[in-house]
Length: 280
Image (cartoon, rainbow, N blue to C red; front, side, top):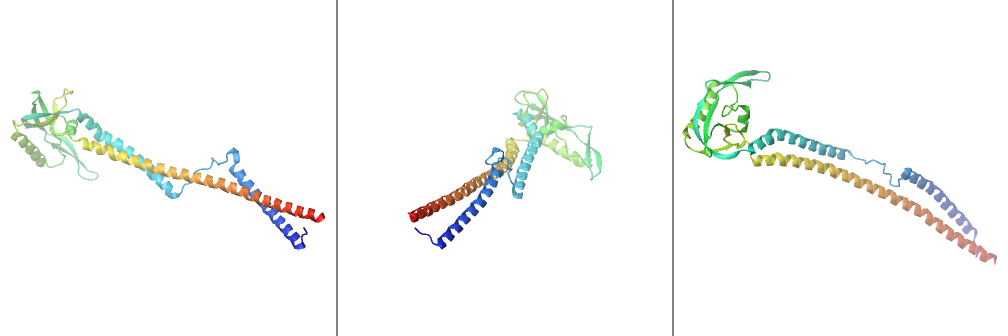
């Protein structure tokens, strides 16, 4: 089989193109593999997760929500949960008012009259003596748990201000209310384990208030943790996709020069066979 000059020229052109392409393909592939497979790690585990500005703000929001929920747990725990635990130890009973009296000695209090102004005042101390129906024990009645902690000698502690007549009228109205209930039983709460002779009229915090104190901080904490977890999961999946794409590109880049070499070898074999037949 004879080859024309044009065929010889085409052969040299194709060979030059294949050799040039093969020579330029291998250094790039080798450089890439040197970068990807450095330190014996084919997937470049030392590569850090890249994050956008939106992801950073989302993570910051999640951590802020979790910090705020912890702060809410602390504040609500000290202001509501602790008094509720003390109040939960009280049992319900019935009381009857025996005697109500306003003490002659008024108690001192402090009030604010402006930004940098504080004044001193006095308020009347109303005492309500009741009888516990189930035990016949006499005790002082207080409005709620907070009134017991502020002043265990008085039924309640009014808001302090300068108008003494207003404070006295409020105390007289409450005294008149219990005077009308003289002998009429009403519900009250006492502490069976305490030796103190005090009962309360109402509980300041019920189970529904405790539910809200625990539910909303827990929901905020869960939402913040969910936001941070979703952002981290998205970054992890993005890194896995990038690593997979790098591996696929390396495999495809390695197969193309091999196919071109195989085609060139087949073409050379056919050319050598043609020359052999010509010589024969």
